[in-house]
Length: 117
Image 1 (tube, rainbow, N blue to C red):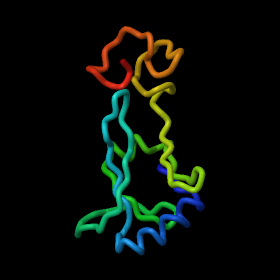
Image 2 (image 1 turned 120 degrees about the vertical axis):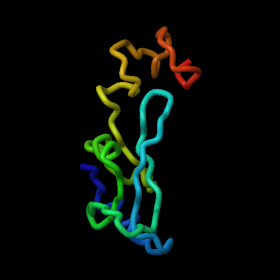
Image 3 (image 1 turned 90 degrees about the horizontal axis):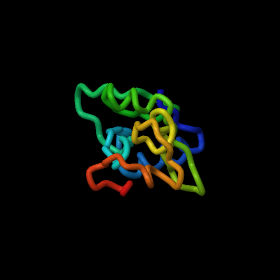
Image 4 (image 1 turned 90 degrees about the vertical axis):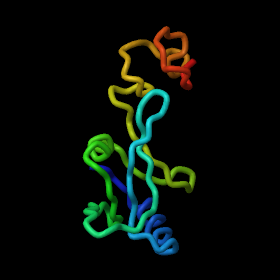
C-alpha cells in the first residue's frame, strides 16, 4: 500500500482544501525506462472509491495500486516527492544487465529513442 508520511500529509491537507479538491488521483505514466506514478488533485465523482491513507483520500486503479505498493510520498528539501522503487532495482528498464555509468549507458538494447541513448 502507498505510504504518505505525516510531513507530506501536513502539506497536502491544506493544499487540497485551498484547491477545493476531495483528494488525490494516482495514475501510471510511462517513462523511457519504466512507469512512474503521477498524482493530481481531483474532485471525486459519484461511484469513485478512494482509499484513505494518513488522512488523505487517494483514488487509483488496480495496476497503479500494485505499482505503488512500496512507494511513498514524503517531503524532500521542503517539496513533495514521490519515491517509487523501480521493479528489480536499477533504472527500472527491467533488464538484467550492468548499468555502470547511469541508466543503460553503454548497453546495446533499444528504448525506441528514449532517454537511455
